[in-house]
Image 1 (tube, one colour):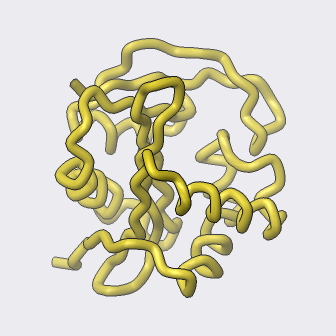
Image 2 (image 1 turned 180 degrees about the vertical axis):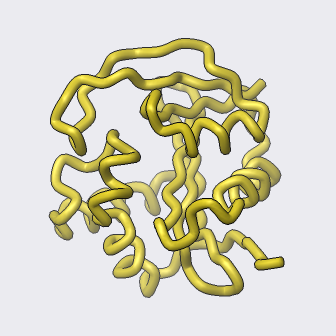
Length: 157
């Protein structure tokens, strides 16, 4: 079985993460992305802010030692929320499920919150396996689709 692991992000990871986060199919699925996934300067600014934040946790996800994504926890209006991005080459292999389980061991804060496009069934399945439960929905602007779409709001107690 392939080994999924988490490690701190390194400067040398940024190019691979940028490329993963601009894959058109992945961007459409995630829906709530950067306004322009091809804007490297905006990506670098965002990553610098995330990495400098004292109230967040950012990890790289590896599969057999190969970088395949990222997972993070950050505080929004006093609530800790998680997000993750897994490279499309690793979809359907349990990588997100395992990475989230490992991350939940790193971030002990509860409750935790998450959000996903309501039609992103893969991500919702990953969150449900980790015992996140839908606590509501919101209609929000999804930059990747340039449309208002339904977003599931989830919570882990």
